[in-house]
Amino acid sequence: MTSVARFLTLRFTLWSFRPYRLLLLAFLLPVLTGCGLWKKDAGPLPPVADLYKQGENDLRRQRYEDARKTFKRLAESYADTEFAPRARFLIGEAFYREENYDEAVKSFQEFLTFYPAHPIADLAQYRLALSYYDQLQPVEKDQGLTSKALAEFEKMVRTYPESRYATDALARMEICRLRLAQKELWVAQYYYDRGQYAAALQRLELILKNHARQSAVLPGVLYLLGEIHFREGRRAEAARVVQRLVDEYPNSGWARRARQRFAGRLL
Image (tube, rainbow, N blue to C red; front, side):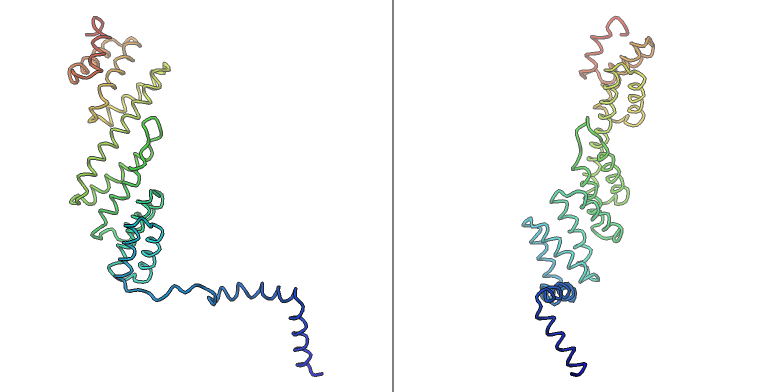
């Protein structure tokens, strides 16, 4: 028998033996898959305008994952068209509407890295700030997200001062600043209630330094300052602070409380 004949006979014998067939199939399966022979055909690429409209329809119908896939396909296949930057923005928008804020932040940051001067860059920066703002926590919790939201709104107003979103950004900045001031006052009250007057005083002075425009919290700050100075025997300093409270915020609840508390003592 020739060497060729012996080789063919051996191949037939091995193929007839089931374990070897299974082993061969197990080897060939990933090879065939990797070659794309069994991959699902994505179909012909639609025109860019049709693909963009499809993504918009998915987004409007709250099919966010489908929208992202469509916009990603557009951005990769039509990278040189005017639709590509908007598609990349809308990937972030889909994450934002889905309240997947971490991914929204990443997407908007990526957009701004590549398209800082695009006509909708101001909207991307605004949405980036909102991705933090929409997660604001109660005063008694950590305010890290508030600080991040404030920083992004400030960047938006500074970079795009003529934006249609600038007015709203300014209003939200004040809310963020108020929240941060309220947090400092909450911490100061926490220390005061435990007799840690030095720590409370430090927090209150920071509010006066960094949040002097937050009139919503200043009456409480002045009252607590007066209390601490009074309790620690600094009557002149206490009188100065309490008098300021009564003069500048005469109709506040804190001023009424101060009149009752310090009548005949400081006032």
